[in-house]
Length: 280
Ligand SMILES: [Fe+2]
Image 1 (cartoon, rainbow, N blue to C red):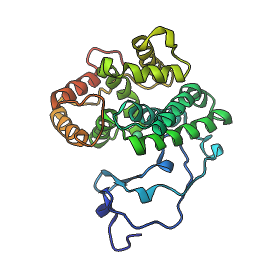
Image 2: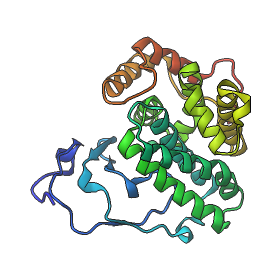
Image 3: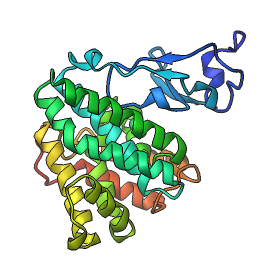
C-alpha cells in the first residue's frame, strides 16, 4: 500500500490514497463499525498515542458478520461496544450532514440496539441478539462514515487520551449528558428515533418522546452497570481538555450545537458528577 511510509505518516485524512489489496473485515465485537468505515484507529503503546487514519480506500470490500465470534465477549465489553454503536447512530442522525440513506442506517441501527443490546448483555449466547447487534454495528458504521460523529466522540477522545477510559465506556457515560445539553434543537430527530425504536409514540409530541429516549439510554446504561459520571476526571485537566476538544470539534463535525470552550468546560465539570450518585 505505502511500503515506504510509517503508519504514523498516514495519520489524518486522505494520506493512504493507493488502493488496498482485497480487504475482508471480520469484526469480533459489535460496536466500532470499522467493517463499514473509512477509519482505522492505531494505538502506539510506546508513546500512548492513539490516532485515526481516514481514507475511503480503507472501507473493506467485504464485511463478514459471524455472530459466533462475539458470543464469548465479556458482558461489559458487549455493553460498552454496543453503546459505542448507539452513539455512532445517534450522532450521525442529529448532525447536519445527514442524507436519506444515513438516516435509514441510523434508524435501523438504533432500533436494533434498543431491542437487542440488553439481551446480548444478559444472555451472551443469544445468537439472535448477537446477530442483530452485528447488523446494528455495521449500519451505525455505514451511517457515521458518511454523516460523521459529534461532541460525544470529541469529549470521549480526550478522556481516552488523558485517563485511558475505554472508548465505548466513555461514550456511554457522555451520551445522555450531551444529548440533554442540546435541548430543543434535537427534539425532532430524537423523537423520530424513539418512535422508530418502539419507545415513543407520535401522539406524545416531540419533546416528550425525546426526553423519554434520553431516559431510556440512562436506563440501558444502568441495567448494564455503566456509571452515570466519570469521577476520574481531574479539575486541573479540564482547561486543556476543553481546548483540545474545541480544536477537534470545530470545524470538523457537523454538530447540532457548536460548543464554545466554556461549554466544553461546563460539560467536563458535569461529567465529574460532584454530588451525584455513582453506580461504580
Ligand atoms: Fe466510536
